[in-house]
Image (tube, rainbow, N blue to C red; front, side):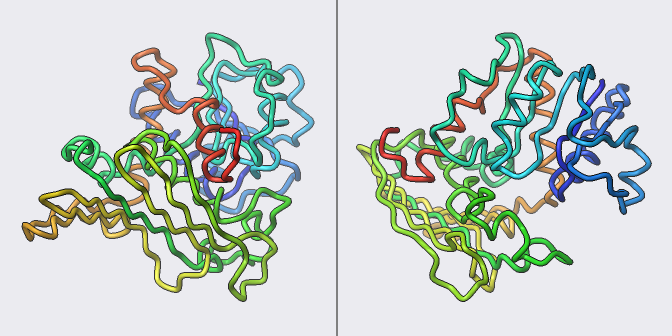
Length: 313
């Protein structure tokens, strides 16, 4: 397979390693090229050893790829996808799909037989998969989810003030940076009928993007509460499900499911690469025609509308 990555941040490097490993295991050692806005040397030797070519962003020309991974800043996604569509069979797009909800997807010129998949890795954690497969979600009448972490700790060795997360005009802000939560919540419970939202910039972090977002997703038979922040000094990623006969607490950081009334615990801990690889396998099966695409651009836009509290969803 001929594969290209558009952008080379930390998530792109993780995907490069995982894609190379997974395809090599299938006997299909890929050619991997990189397109980026500046011609800098790749510092990681393991990435260098498996990348065939590094191009500047304006050098796509007549190149054609089986898959292109869009891993540049969110604010550039729409134009990058539009540019790449004629040059590839399939596209894997990092979340969030776009910076705003107003983009006209028809302008992208998407091809009917191609797959356009938007990343949703938390769906593929062992914890969320366990909940999806083992708990009768129709009996859940209240949900509480939290994702709290400290932005300066996200990217070791990088000044957080210079990242896209810190700047609203680059697509940053906790509401869409942590769109993972609304993705897995809609994966479990479908789309809410309406959403209440409050948020803004409240901490002393040196950023101009929002660092707090709080939601109440209203369904006919349940309410989903969601808290997102950039300033929590202890990383928390939790989901609590309330039912008539049990309370189930899921810890996505520790990889544990606790049945609070029964006193039972299920240990599902795994390294991050395990669920990231699970999603890549899923994507490869989609482009192979084995399963349907369950994370389309259209679906991702609907999730983005919830995250941004867009009234016309």
